[in-house]
Image (cartoon, rainbow, N blue to C red; front, side, top):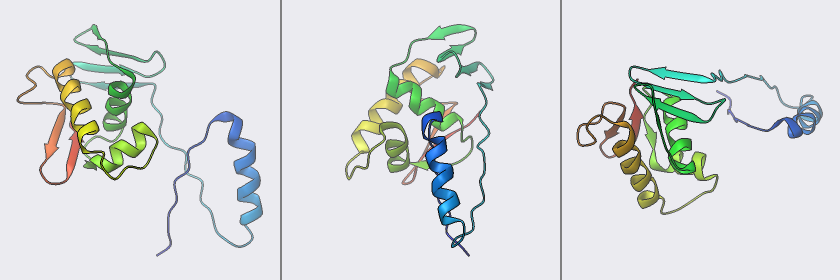
Length: 137
């Protein structure tokens, strides 16, 4: 089985990435997969309008910090998938960390207070003990 590498890049980097892939394609096989980007992530009672950078709960706008919003989008874009604290930290904070535990836990706690009907019994963001978190939509 081969190895898989996932690259994300902005529009300005697209030409450089195409040149790199073209240069390497003689020696390595590549399969380009476009992620399914949905400008609207919709769940019962919760909408994330990515093109507007807005979150609505029951039609009411919820005010989120940048880290809360990015964490929510990351989790909601991967519903049902258990994500570790390290995966969340690296995706949202865009850096590696040996001790990301408290940062992720604090953001998840704040998110639950803002989007969950009952933050003590979350509907959307579930804890998977000893592993991480998953989003149920």
